[in-house]
Length: 249
Length: 111
View (cartoon, rainbow over the protein chains, first blue to last red):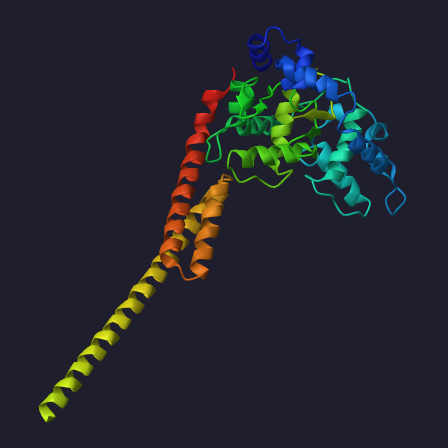
């Protein structure tokens, strides 16, 4: 696949499965710091909270486990998926809120701590499992993938950046104090604890803040564009292991 | 004495006329400024709405619109008009970006 080959050629010393570690795969100084930090991972509190939330029954007595295959354990690598009935992409964050609503609970914020904690726990139960995103033989699924690709490469915001500007053209380079992560494997580590945020962040939070950083007005979290973007990026990382929850500067 | 008194009255009337004329013309400038602001703001809002329909609004456009609105609320119509014009320029740039990127994105694609 051309996308994967591009990164492999650009970083010949980086093992394929290492791309899931983002900037730590490309910058040795940062990697050493991360390994030190990971002795006491900053996402640990959120992970514990997520485990607790996941097991806490809704008011009707059911739990998140009742909404997912394999009771929600070790399934993160299969999200997002294309739902043939709805004709749209369903992400893990969306599925979690739909589970809440189906059980009479109000949805939680897609960019908030509870969603980050829940997805952190679910990612943790999938650690090491390779992304396994399917594009079924369905014109709408292929359209969703193509829409995600178009979003990824489209320049936006006053700074005229696309996602690809940072994560294809300049991974490993500095953007102010940040070392930019490669697009390959970029979602495998989600959700992430970011020192810059001082908290955990979901994929929705990452997408919306990326947009505002380039002075583009973010879309609504879990809008169709973001869901398609997640579908596209996850599919490109098929075969690479889930490493989330992650930690980033 | 009568001549002196009548010339004083004439002078007073002239001054009063001048003052009234000045007051009137200032009011018309202010009214003109407000109407300029209203039309500039409407144009900016319309452009920003179009950018919204293209799903490509910019944060800086929204910020300029807010500044225009706030300046208008405190009666600073010159400033408000300038901000509205700036918002329109930014919104039009975002529309241009969205329309040109309909095809231009393909140039970045890894194949």
